Length: 390
Image (cartoon, rainbow, N blue to C red; front, side):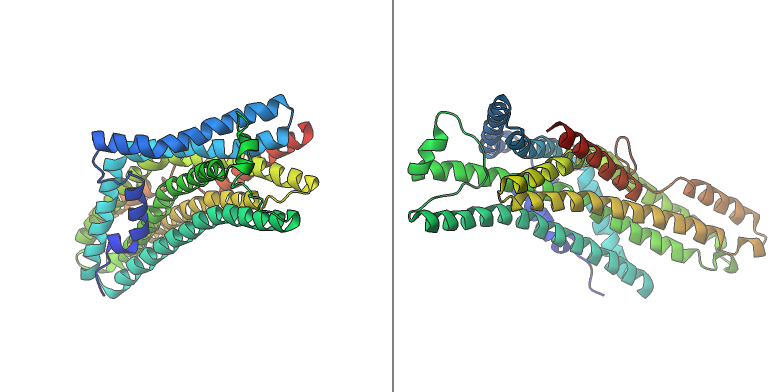
C-alpha cells in the first residue's frame, strides 16, 4: 500500500483555501489584510447594490424581485461569517489536518484489513470533495449559460446585439438604461455580478466539505477499533489490548470534540441559511413560471441548498451509527465467557462512555437526518407563509 497523502487527496480543497486566503497555514499580517481589502471590496459593493435593489423593489411592492434579490444577500451574510470562522479556528483546523496526516502515515504499519478501511474512507472523502466542487462550478455555470442563451435569443429576435445580465437586479443612477448602450458599463456590472457569485461559491467550497471529510475519517477509525474487539477476551494480553482500545477511543473522542469546536457555528449557519434559501428560491421559481420568465439558476440554487444540507447530515448520521456499532461490538466481545475482573471494569468504562453518541453538533441541533427533516419542515412552513401573504 502506498502511503496516503492528504495534500494530494484533497489538493483542490487546499488550493481553494489558499486562493481564499483562509488556509490554516496562512500568515495573518498587514499584507493579508491588504489582500482581503482588495478581494472583498467588489464583493461588498455587490451586496450594497443588492440591498439598494431590494429597497427599490419593496417600495414598488414588487415582492417577487425583492425576494429574488434577497437570495444572494443570504449567501453574503453566511459566507462572511464562514470566512471569519475559518480564520478564527485555523489553528484547530491545522491540528485536525495534521492528525489525519499522522493517521495516514501510520496506516502503512497496519494489517491489510485496517489499511483497506483507511483507504476506503479516504476515497469516500475525496469523492465528497469532488462532488462539491462540481456542484459549486455548475451553480456558477448555470448563471452564465442563462445569460449567454438570453443574449443569443434576444439578439436574434431584435436583429441587433442585446446583452443579457448575469443576474437580474436594479442599479441606481440610471445604470440600468446606460449599460444597454455602454458596453464598458455593462462589462463592469457583469464582472461584479459574476465575481460575487464565484466568490460566494469559493468560500462555500472552502468551508462545508471539510466537515464530511473529517467525519468519514473518524468513521474509518471507529471501524478499526470495532475490529479490535473481536475475540479480545480470548487472548492472553486482554488488558493490554483494552488499554490500546481506550487510547484509540480517547483520540477519536478528542478528534470529534475538535470538529465540533471548529464547525458548531458553521453548521448552525448552514442550517439556518438553507431554511431561508429553500422557501425563497421555491417562491422565486413558482412566481417566475407564472410570469413566463426563465429562472433556471434558482432551480440550481434550490438543488444546491438541498444537497449542501443533506450531505453533512447524512455523514453525521453515519458517524452516530458507527459509534453505536462500536458500543454493540464492545458488548458482544465475549466478556461473559471469561472471568477477568480488571478487563471487565475497563470494558464497563468503555461501554459507559459509548452510551454518549459520537456526534457532530451545531449550536441547537445534532447534525443528523432527523435535523435535516426539521430543516425541510421549517423551510416548507416559511414557504407556505410567503405563498399566503404574497
